[in-house]
Length: 398
Image 1 (cartoon, helix red, strand yellow):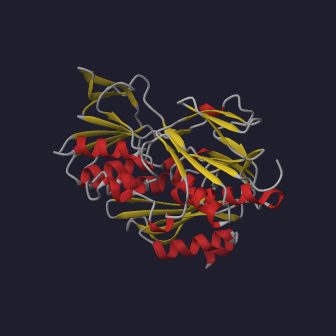
Image 2 (tube, rainbow, N blue to C red; image 1 turned 45 degrees about the vertical axis):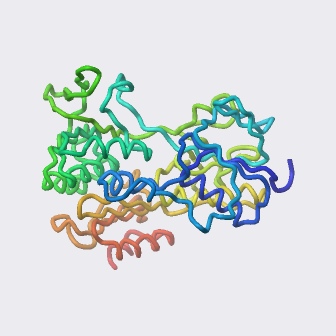
């Protein structure tokens, strides 16, 4: 089909999908617009789930993303429905209720699903924290000073541990790596994160994994760790990463490899673009296909994917500097850039001992990322400089 689409379908009713829908209308698309989401909820904001919602500071409805500015969005919402199959030739998406939804242009923004501990799918008291319903369930379970086991000390696990401690729960956090976030941020920074949690009363067990969960009457009661030690708990929150939600796309003809593979413009196939956690697109700045799971990224990529869908052959490449933050207690971690494969990490502002610093990450002779802890203004400046590809020697002598 040539020309602009007349029927646009967005699969995914979260941040990336909503951003795509808004951008389509903003860019002049006046055709039929349908958004499919596998949750019953209209789009909501995810960052507050592990913080304000889990802490009971916000009611769930406060996370809603739709506002007065969306009154003219004119979307047909298909909520509580899961995409089951894609037929690229017929340009239809089959839903789990048997309906086939036709499209001229498709935005795949269906996100990712949390990894689970094998054999725990039907064990009561074992939670992920990915959805609004997850956050409400954990919030209710933590009330009254419960004993919480957090499996995984990545960003989600660390935020859950921090919030649970702040509402008075006893928290044990288990991490197979020597320090939290060491693979992402480096061991020196990881040790700072570890010390912050221990100072707030978290029983942090590093260098050890969970061998199995213990249960009674179908409910989790504790865990046996790989070193033979045990942890008693009233609930467990598992934060061991996510996998792109691509199962429904198998056999569609789209390239799948740790996400839906797309070109530099976010195009994955004829009339198909991708955005958000499910997308693995060619990032020209880094010279490779990447997949990024950040909130800010989902918004920007959703809008860019929509623009690509309407632009046809005139579509532009999507090559942002990734941007992410995490709030843990009174510490705010902010990361700009891409740290994978860094050759060196150096603190250039403040100090690790103060827990208030900026660290730069080098790959070759270029600064590829900057991390700040409680240094938002300097980090914002480094984010802007990363977009201009600042050299290492220049950066460390400023």
